[in-house]
Length: 465
Image (cartoon, rainbow, N blue to C red; front, side, top):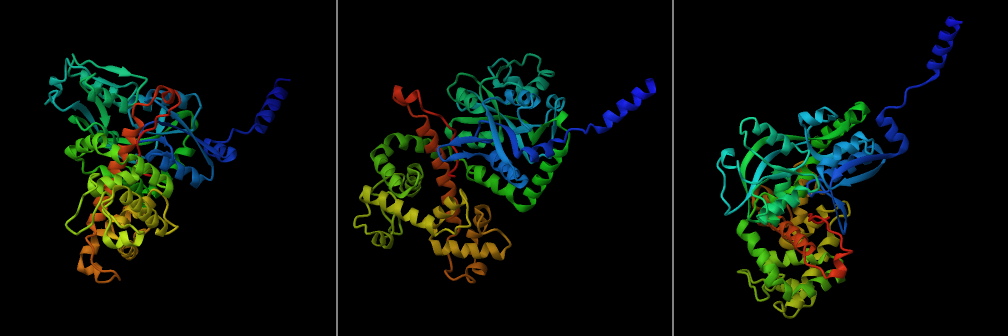
């Protein structure tokens, strides 16, 4: 009987198959569930839809798998690991550092980015020259983060180092606390600070606490490695194809040259100059299907919102229209602010229509801005040069490398429309992207009437999508 029981159990066990691995489960159900952070360096939802570096990458990964992307956004980094371990998501794409504490529970894929870890202070409050000068002052950081891990490591040397951990905030809120002098210091990764410092121009880097901190996608250990391996292959290919470079340029390219004085002036002009013209920007944007804040950003780049502005080359008005462009648009008085704003909106919309259908957003917006500045024909020449150099003419990150070549005889002599100061549209686009981000942040943080405050939804500032 015992032998028969053993044979029977072996037979039954032999008919039981192991559950499919995680990747097969995802392909079977047709969806990839991803937990991410509600922060500009990961994922935000704006009026024109979701965006963010992590979102762009994981959306491309889900498209490659042929499955639907299900995003679960959390407001604090401390919520990510528990949700992964509870099986509420298949993976995390949230700008996570690879730390020893996380490695106890998670497997990490191939690092796709590295960031520096900054200690942030406010200008005028006293910049520390070492950790010794930080001891005794207030520090607030994200709970369950690599930042708190780093402080724990520092306390082994600086025994009196103290800080508080916030489990209900993201880095944007902590930076605002430093800017408002509610706390002396916080810690921010360079990826977050590169975006958010534009909104708080008095914030500065006090010390670099770590250089080259690696970021990677995270997976629950119990899930095996099938999804991780497929994600690594995707990221390797994204690096080779230029997708990673394109995503980096989309969200960080315009932040490389931070202008402290220019940002402060912009905020002041937002309060003093823009109100005179805002209604016209809003109406023109609605008429021509363009975000009014993008039109206002163009106007600021062109004239700093001065209706009587005149350039050395003779272009005039808030939107700096040439005489030929004004004639084409039927505008008689280029310095009339309303005519200039509506004319600029129409001209920009026309440039957008002329961009090839193969160009996706936000690159389509960037190219239309470049055409507004340098002219559509020079943009076409730059597209040809991009093709000759083996780049993608539909990708702004590649086209922006070719535009400056229009000032070199070797290149402009080979294209139909010849010489152009091709570096100018690249700077032009980068500046407008920064102004647009600032306008989004400023308008979304305006004081609303009480009735509107109850229903308003706040979203982080992003580049045009």
